[in-house]
Amino acid sequence: MDIASLGGLLMALVLVIYGITAKDGFGALNGFLDRDSALITFGGAFMGMLATQSSIPEFIKKLKSISLIFKPQTVNELETIQTVIKLSNVARKDGLLQLEEMANNMDDAFMKKGLLLIVDGTDPELVRSILETELSSIEERHSANIGFWEALAAAGPAWGMIGTLIGLINMLGKLQDMATVGPNMAIALITTLYGSMLANWICTPVANKMKENNGAELKQKEILVEGLLSIQAGENPRVIEEKLKSFLAPNRREELNSGGEGGDDVG
Image (cartoon, rainbow, N blue to C red; front, side):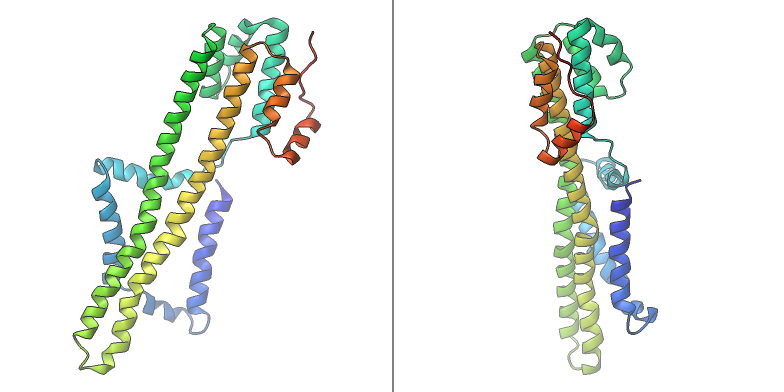
């Protein structure tokens, strides 16, 4: 469980509730609950998104993708580089064929695929092409989910404004009864609040977290591509290490140096 994502969303909701109830107690929440406003804002936004999807199952699948932000990320650039360096040492000492056994014991499907390709003697350019096509497919899947939540973030406030306009029209139609102007105005504005909450409390954080996770995963796999091709080219493990360090921030390069996984100087 990603505590940062869960904690951030929960604390944001707690702070909003605190702001509403700080002076007048929890009874003040009743003034912020309105069924019709919720139907217009949430119903309109979600049904509008449904209309843009290829099918209802696809819509449900993208809604469920919110669970991805709560899964702990296993991406670790340092460990990836250390693994590549270890593989390069094995390949330099014992040959590429020795990597096949190591590949069969790996859980990372992308790394396993790349290793088996170079063990089979596949042309380096073809290896790069296959792995980069895999990367493009991963990015395309991630982008579809990110785009869904970004579009929903835009739809929420828009439908909130539509609800507010409906409320204002109804209010202006009853101006002869001035006692109802205040309550009706409050109800009209609730839809704007709902739309803003949908966008800024849920959709935008979800989309941004997915972007962050996507960037981290793609960077890790780019490290793997460069590392595996360097192993196939027979480069010295020290050279591979220095090449892959360029993917890291300077302070993280020091962590790699202190990790004791440097390449061996094999002649």
